[in-house]
Image (cartoon, rainbow, N blue to C red; front, top):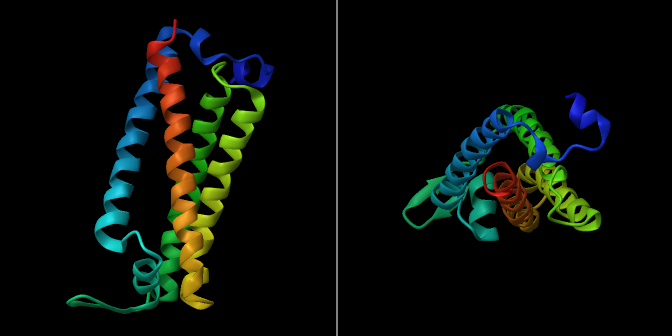
Length: 164
């Protein structure tokens, strides 16, 4: 923590065992991202219509979906807010410790990831209770999280294992 606080933290200069711990976190995070992709693909779908049906209810092919109840959204938001917040914090710190990209690019990637997290937390509520058109926000949030998250993860993993 002292290294992070000093402002001069460089991930590639961290002790080997610390980089291996970070690499382990990044691998587990990659598994989490892959299972999220599976959930989004299998359960929800990648179109605004499929997203709206998942949260608002309706028919999809042979299946009838019921609207997500308030309690379900509270439960999912509660768990995701804590977990996504922690994962974002750690990924952003590790990514910020990489010298590979300039400060403006890093800032844009981190901001994109943060907006993806906020959008992912808000969109289900907006789709369910305001309008199906907010499904576009959900889709945009997922894409932001995927692009920025994988970028931060890949650069950080390179710094932990590949850079020397």
